Image (cartoon, rainbow, N blue to C red; front, side, top):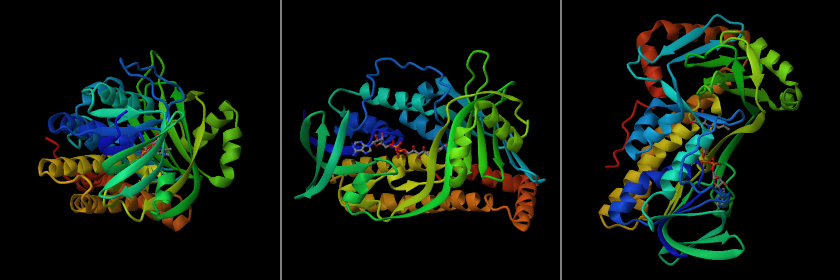
Length: 415
Ligand SMILES: Cc1cc2nc3c(=O)[nH]c(=O)nc-3n(C[C@H](O)[C@H](O)[C@H](O)COP(=O)(O)OP(=O)(O)OC[C@H]3O[C@@H](n4cnc5c(N)ncnc54)[C@H](O)[C@@H]3O)c2cc1C
């Protein structure tokens, strides 16, 4: 096993794997060597094998993320099993305010796309495994146990099966998720705020086609999103994300399927049809986490390890993906200029470039969540009036839609 890489990416999740894929053309052109270290085993990916799942988590991808996937060369494959969102319907339970967004009004083929996480993971890992031999190594199942500064480079200690290994590298990218243990080990502080809520995630079947409509509904217990999923033969599926206060979570998880669907109907109404089947329910504690430092000499913190958001606006991964391309562009420039990839100058430029986007996206998710989780009648009235006003003002709607689609800022060019 080789022990020297230009870049070591810790975590082969959605963000770490996306960075490796974004760097493949540069790896081949500029001779970059990259290791991706992932704790969990991944299947060898000679062929892509999609099987629609009833219990799979799904992610809403902004239209801007499609443009990124086109640039990094996986859009065509990903698109084989995606569900486009043509309309978004936003409403507030028990109040008059409604806003509707429509793809043709915004002059885009779709406002976004819904992808099942297992399919996105397969496409990313398959692309890595099929890159030119020797450029990108996927080390798995392997766990990074420590990172040290060693002379002018970084040393990564890892456990691969029974064996311990040491890797030397110019740059470590920590994409090890929201519960990053390495963040603590490296003494990187973070701000964390619990929303005292859990997200319940499941798939649910209406008795009629969803017509590519995504719904966001604000309810007494918290926001609820219904995302259209690719249809199985004759079976319509939607991904449900329902935010529930911590003290209600056990009760909701313990409901029978029919009581659970009745609970959803009570809050959501029948605008998407009657729910006739529901999959397994999974729950996730919701916290806002923001790392105090995202770059150091030789080190970048990326994805959920850097910032984990409330899922209300479906922006966490989309924001991270914009970070992935911005970082990849800086690393390519640095390599072409013959600089060390761990130099702080270009890493700081990357952090600076992402600061505004992170501030805006995190602030939007956090404020929306707080505004729509407060049941005070006056706030409710203002909220409904706001939704109604937005609905009646095409210009404001376009500004809002472009921001949600990630189109209000330029995408870095990797070519
Ligand atoms: C309910 C819910 C719904 C969401 N919906 C959306 C949405 O619709 N749209 C959107 O944009 N975002 C959404 N998000 C956010 C999105 O899921 C996250 O932004 C994304 O998963 C972050 O990916 P990541 O790779 O940073 O972290 P993870 O997915 O946590 O990946 C980290 C990886 O690192 C590995 N790892 C950890 N430690 C080590 C170690 N020491 N050594 C080796 N490997 C290690 C782990 O095994 C894991 O594979 C949602 C989140 C939730 C909770």
